[in-house]
Image (cartoon, rainbow, N blue to C red; front, side):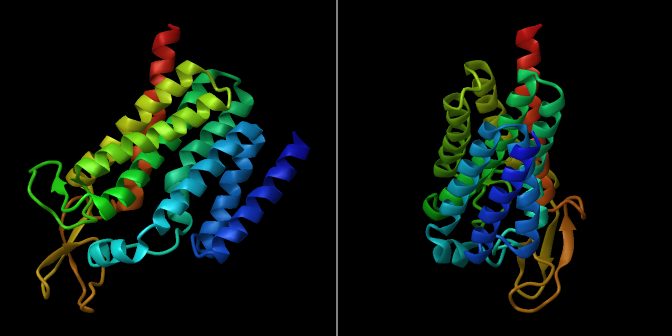
Length: 264
């Protein structure tokens, strides 16, 4: 165990340093990624492999058409660059927690919970990255009216299909890594549910701000024009990172719940 933890720390740190150099992570993001990666490997090499595959695929997708996506979303999204510590923990923290609990309690419920959390994050990431690039103008999940790309709660056919594929990617990897058919299937269910919950809770509760100069709704505290924005609706302190954390938690709960129900 000690040897694996040390090896995990060195591996996670090395990957984080490379990601920092490639500007996929900020310095704080690299530190947080090292912590999450070490926790994953401490639970087992398969946990580490699942996390690495998720991270590599997500980072690769974020680079595809980056300039085009930025042009569409930079006036709306608060964070558009390398991922910081808050973003890393919002997307991988629940997975890391499941890994740590799984070290103490050897139960398939923690495999399902961890994979479900990561599948939800992958679903959200794939849906956002590919939907923004190829999905055209999204529509609000609540009103079905067109909304600017990058708007939380905005969905498209391409984005929705990509979310399912992202969750399926993690679930398929979990199955290939020997986590079992049921935990993997439940992870898929949790991932799809979590990604959908991300869009729904984003549309209902995420803080929205308004630029009175440009007349545009945004997540940004200061808009492109340099004007300070004001809170318009939603829960003032609930940003996109909070929504992502809730989505991964939801994915974990659904996957773990299905595992418990079937076992009962």
